[in-house]
Amino acid sequence: MIDKPVRVRFAPSPTGFFHVGGARTALYNWLFAHRHNGKFILRIEDTDRLRYQEESEPDLISSLRWLGLDWDEGPEVGGDYGPYYQSQRLPLYAQYAAQLLAEGYAYKCFCSPERLAALRKEQRASKLSHTGYDRHCRNLTASQVSERESQGIQPVIRLRTPLEGQTSFHDVLRGTTTVDNETLEDIVLVKSDGYPTYHLANVIDDHLMEISHIMRGDEWLSSCPIHVILYHAFGWPIPPYIHLPLFLDPAGKGKMGKRKTVGPGGREYLVLVKDFGAAGYLPEALINFIARLGWSYDDHTELFTREELIVKFSPEGLNASPARFDYDRLDWMNGVYIRELASDDLAERLLPFYHRAGLNADLPTLQQLAPILQVRLKKLTDAIPLSGFVFEESFDLDPVLLVGKKMDARASLDALRRTRQIISQANPFAPDTLEQPLRDLASDLGIKAGSLFGILRGAVTGQQVSPPLFETMAIMGQKRTCQQIDRGIAVLQETANA
Ligand code: GLU
Image (tube, rainbow, N blue to C red; front, side):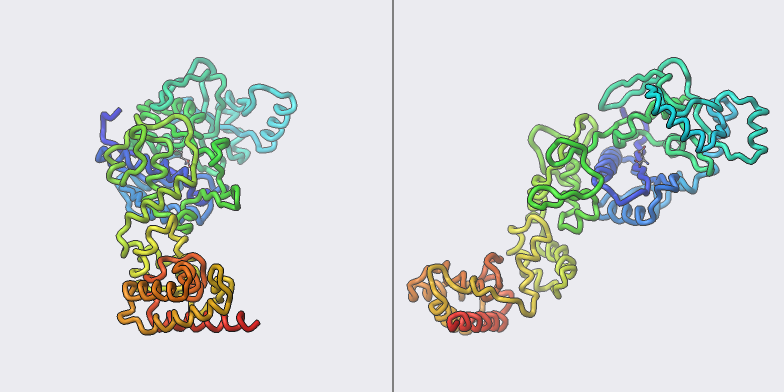
């Protein structure tokens, strides 16, 4: 399959935010290029002016960079085969369209949008099996063409598909597909605004950019015969095709949506790359996860570093049937990757999440917190409910959490006062000097250590669940811990007096 320098491309249309399905297509191309010392090219297919969305390209670029899928040629980096925006290549397409016209592979069509709409309506009403353009202008004479042109009608250019015979193409994953040409339509190659359609521009660019393999989503399978006819018309060799199956939704029933949905228990099923980042997924985890959606190395290996993927990825491991996007699996994998981070790295990655939550977190404190948070996170965002209190000036204390198990408010108040004494005297103020004296206190009081720690946790963190208590107090410092306990004492006094 590899008989010339590998040059593969990812060719998105800027019509919306970058979808995780597109990310997988980009990833496979990127891996293939890296595996074979080839080039990964980013080409922006922006010829559909109606569907164009301005925010799309910046989102694409930042998402690809976040995922670490850098390109060797394309926007921002340039290259010898540019421009890499199709909207900047219009003269090229015009030149090739003129060639197709001159050689009879294409023709000008002057049908008005109204005529085409009426045609569609009529076809629908009579339930014709073969719909589409009726080739009205296919056999206009030269003088008919110039007459219409002199009337100022802007034509479109259509492909003159062969009416007989068959067109075949080979896909690495699916083998050979053959279609009867009579089932194909004379599709538009150049629109009346002078912009090429996807089909024409895509084929021309893949050829001119010397693309060696075409790996893309299988929504383009049905267009393939048209592309093949174009390649034949130009007399160009056809690169090997690999059409990748789409993702299935978490239930494995339907196609994965284009938009975020809400699943059972209010769980959000994200689909946009930017949303995964904002939800606290690590790019390396998302890369590993999507790499495995439709590709496997063997029957059991799940975890692959990027370097391992480069070495091990090959189209032979691709699966022709669609894979289910299992969010639980992704969460698990993300947790694995979080645990593997150096704790200072984790701290740096966590910092923006605290800031986004309006918390005035600082890096030195997070560097202390990171090791005790690390094993408790599936997503970076999990750190906020778990430890946000560390950076909060004041937060409400829940009286319920301040009363120990099988204890009343008075007994809890007494326990907390004596706890404060120990804590304020601990020297140095460190987990080692705190735990044993407090365990001794619990046995003096005839209560379980767990009950005492529960009261203390309620006062210091305001929560029932927190990172390990003694480490957390050490990070918060003696003064702040005592202040928190004082607030707990005040709340308990009120409760006891009520
Ligand atoms: N512009 C097409 C898209 O957005 C690219 C299809 C292809 O890779 O050929 O999916």
